[in-house]
Image 1 (cartoon, one colour):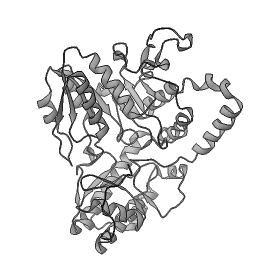
Image 2 (image 1 turned 180 degrees about the vertical axis):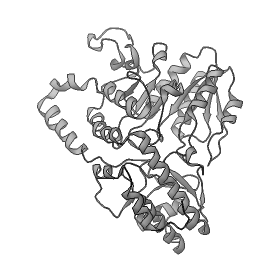
Image 3 (image 1 turned 30 degrees about the horizontal axis):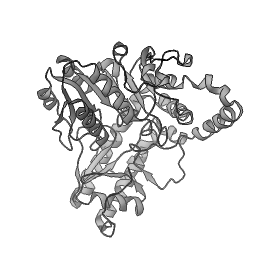
Image 4 (image 1 turned 120 degrees about the vertical axis):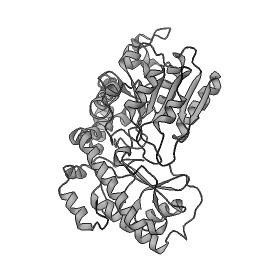
Length: 420
C-alpha cells in the first residue's frame, strides 16, 4: 500500500469490499467510535437480542422444562457448526462447553494421563498466562518437567526452537495458533508434523485465531484444540468455549472432570461413571443455554461471509495499519511489534511505544478509538473483518497520529489496568 494513503482511498476500498454489507448485521450505536478491540470482545450481532428474547419468553417462559429435549444437544450441534464454518474439523469432533481454561485443563490432563512414561511438557514462554499457569499446576501435581520455549516478543515462536526442544520424553506441547500479544501466526501443520515425529501431542489454543484466520484441524493433523467464542466469533461476553478432539483419539482419552453430561445414557443415573462415546465424553455439567443460544446468530454471519473472505479482508486491514504506522507514527517513537509479513500475522497488529499504556487510555478517552494494551509496552489494534471498515482503520490511525503529535497521553495515569 502507498505510504501517502489518503482517506478517499480507504473509502474506495470499503465501496469494493464484498463483506461491507455485513456491518449492518451488527449493533453499532455510535458511528464515530472506532472499535479496534474485536480480538478481545466482538460486537453484538443485530439478530442476537430478538433470538434470545424468543428463547427466554417461549423456550423458558412458556416451555419450561419441556424445552430441554430441544436444548440438550446444543453443545454438539453448535460444535458441528463451528467445525464446519471455522475449524476445518469433522462432525462429532467439536463441542461447545465450559470456559477455555477449563477445557484446556480437561484436554491437557487427559493427554498427560495417556502419555505413558513421558515426563516433559512444552509451552511457549510468552503464551497467554492461563495456559502457562494451568500447565505449571499440572506439572507440579504430577512431578513433570515443564519447559518454557524461547519466543520472540514480536515475531513469536520459531519452528527451529520447537524442533530443538522435541524429544521422545515430550508428552504434550501447548501453543497458541496466534499470539495474543503480537498476532504472530504459527504454521499449525508444520508444528503438528514435528510433534508427531517424536510421538508428542499438540494442544492448540485457538482463541485469537478462530473466526479470523482459516483453521484446518483435520488437514493439519491436529489432535487437540480449545478456544473461545466471544472474540471474532461474536458470541458475547463470557460466551462458552469449545474443545476439539480428533476422532481417532476420543476413545483413548478419559477426561478428568467426570460429570453427568459426559456419561453414557446420562438419564439412567448409573452408579459408576461410564464415558459417553465420542466427543460428548468431554462434556461435564448442564450447559448454559442462554449463552449457547447467542452463538447461533453469530455463526450465521460467519457462515455467510466465509472464512476465506474474512481472512483476505483481515490481512488487508492489518496491512493498512502497518502502512500508516510506518508513515505517520515512526517519528513519534512507535515501531511495529508484530510480524511484518501479513502471512505470518493473525488479524491484530501490535505497536511498541514506551508509553503504550497511557497512549491506549488517551486513545479511548480523547480520540474515541478503542484498542487495548498488553505488557510490557504494546498498543494492540484488532480490526474485525466482519464489521470494521477500512475508513475506520484510517480514522483510528489519523487520530493516533494527532494524539502523538500533541503528546496527549502525558496527563493520563499510568498505573496498571484491571480491564482484561
